[in-house]
Image (tube, rainbow, N blue to C red):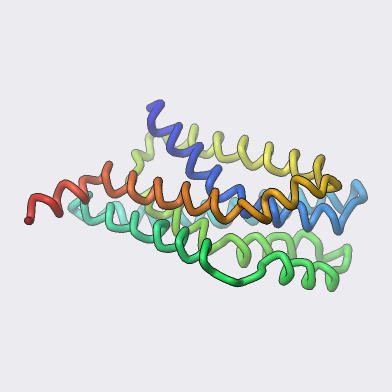
Length: 203
């Protein structure tokens, strides 16, 4: 159980580094208490939709008879981590440009939209293989852990919005942190599912 929870913590932490930069940009744009509450609600809702989607897909994938086949899904976060690290796409510039066009009444909707667009592909690439190879007995405690990590991420991002050194750090090393976590977890998923062992036995 402890191993499952630790893996859950690392999994969500891996997706939080990129999202942290998104939150810094958003909180930097919306500073009033009313706007901040809308941002927080949108962040929870956006992440809930991503996690819920991953769990639904994982339920169907669990019907695959051989677990080692599910382990092949671990290749996805490895690829996404490598792609994200070497990609030249400037998500920060895109998000900043989009935020300038948002009205106060549409903040929640747009934060959900930003969460899905900016982090959806990467998060699902990690969540689906993880949930597909995880015992759902631990699902409630895993979701609680995800909620705690998200809450801490939101709180810290809100508090340090004005600290340029923090923003610069995640801008410079965020992709590297995400690459390492995604690759390690992808390999771990394949190992736990017996994918490596099965492929080696075929040699």
